[in-house]
Length: 215
Image (cartoon, rainbow, N blue to C red; front, side, top):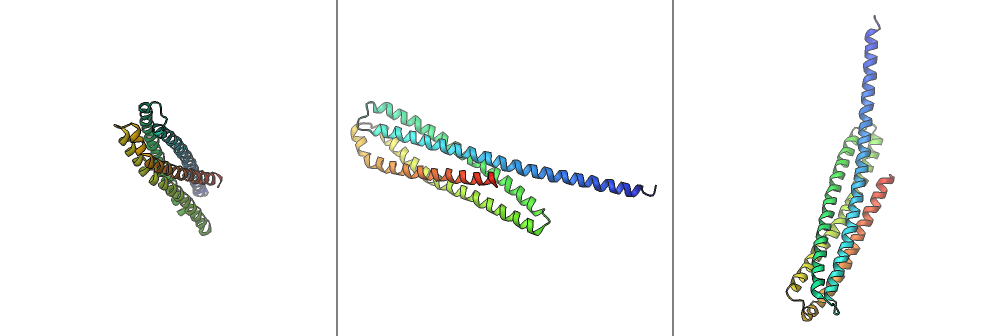
């Protein structure tokens, strides 16, 4: 009988240890899932950006077909350009949606990571975790900066394209087309600059996704 309190205390300690281990296990599992979800979201972002670029190239091909000196049916070419522009806008909207989703997943991951790091009792291990978290945030900032660079070029480019489409809307004769030649040359140059910015964004994304997956 004298050993009963000790047995009870021992059982309570073991139960607490098991419960604590379960909590740690769930926290670790949650962290792994959050990283996997961020990687999945980032991959979806890369896919949407790639699709948007391909659609933009199709739109510019349609635009140049309208302005081609030997265009057989400029009116039909113009209608095709309008459709391609509508599709481009849908692809652009999807990129924005995927970007917002990626930002949300990153916010969840970093918040959870910060909480886990603060709970580490070892100063050395806590410091290493903080360093890794800082590195992860820096990589994500690189992704965000590259994406903002492409977005900053996209808006004025599409505005210029839209202005020229409106200009041609009621005047598809050879004289109107010839008048747009300097503007067309400038727009095509802007398109090449935009493609390069998009490629930089996807390269930055892929590089950081690979690092996040490996580390």
